[in-house]
Image 1 (spheres, rainbow, N blue to C red):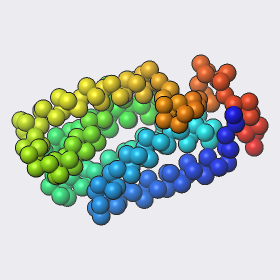
Image 2 (cartoon, one colour):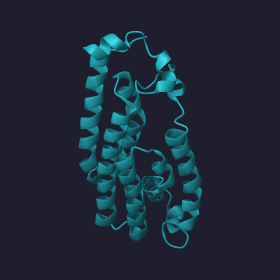
Image 3 (cartoon, rainbow, N blue to C red):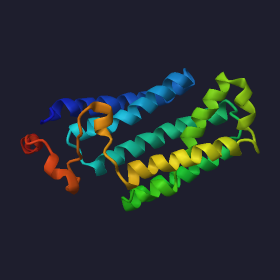
Length: 199
């Protein structure tokens, strides 16, 4: 089945604009901004795929938007005096190094070696604002415990997405879709792809 390239390209750019807009809204409603950004970050790959963008191009835009969001999180952390700010800063720089190496080498392996602990720990912090008895876990040395739980999960996620590059589209959309630059699965592309590409 061929997808409507023009329609999905419009959805892609609407997604990009919306994600850019969400950054500053973290100072208005941190929960709304965080949850919407998380949701859009999870679904945007499918939009890029159906718009017939190559995976390499998607990675460029996605990681750039991720970094844009991380900067707003970091500003929020220091502006609102979130506990363990130095740990958050270290995790931000740690992930930044992975994204810089990805940009320079195009090797997604670096995202596994520099997993996204920064954003996940921030989500944990948000939950501690709802569950007061968890708040001591945001201070050293007890913060080691949530980090010890977050790290294996983050590594598994990075392994699935960036090393194995498992195709999970069928689980979420009911249809298995493929990147146009994926040589292993090119034979499964919709017959209408070429005519879409030429438009």
